[in-house]
Every structure is written in structure tokens, then in C-alpha cells.
Length: 116
Image 1 (cartoon, rainbow, N blue to C red):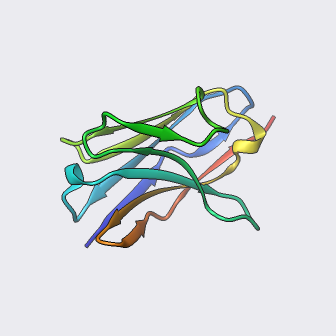
Image 2: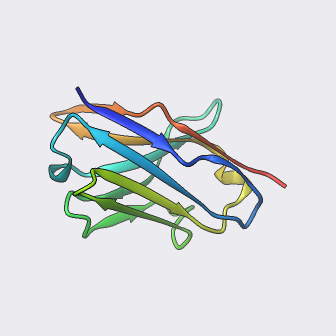
């Protein structure tokens, strides 16, 4: 079955950096685009970044452009989110996601807290 396991979240000061990782299994990872979403209490889940199956095309929310970088390793079946210049507003639970044949799968999420 499809499994997505995020890691790498934590507490960081404003201006700091974190790298999130997502380990994927149970599907042909190299065939599918992957996405990172985030959610804060009371708000809808927001698309943060996406990457196509080969890793050659990426897209970002305007709020994170030039600060976040999504990447993937198809051999290791991993997807990453490098986050630099973190702001208090980036505080959220971050989720790894894949859409396969019309069904969206989610990991359990990893908490990122940006605070001084």
C-alpha cells in the first residue's frame, strides 16, 4: 500500500533553515509528481511546492518562492523540501502528497514551528 513518511520538522528561529524529507513506498515512485502541502489550525491545506516525476520541473506557492526548494531522489524514493529564510508565518504541519489514479495519498505530517 502507498506509504508516505515525513521527517525533519522541528523548532527553528526566524531566518533559520530546515530540510524536510519524505520516504515513499508502495507505488512506482519515479512515475508520479510529488507535492508538499502545509496546514495551520482553522485553515485549508495549502500547496507549498510540487515536482514532476523526473524532477526537472518544479512549482512553488508565491509565499515561499526563492526561499524553499523541492527536490527528489528517484533511486532512493525520497522527496525533500529545503526551507531557508523561515518566517513565523511558515509555522504549520507539512505533508507529503501523491495523487495516483485520482486518489490523493498523504503522510502523517511533520510539525514546523518558527519562533524566537
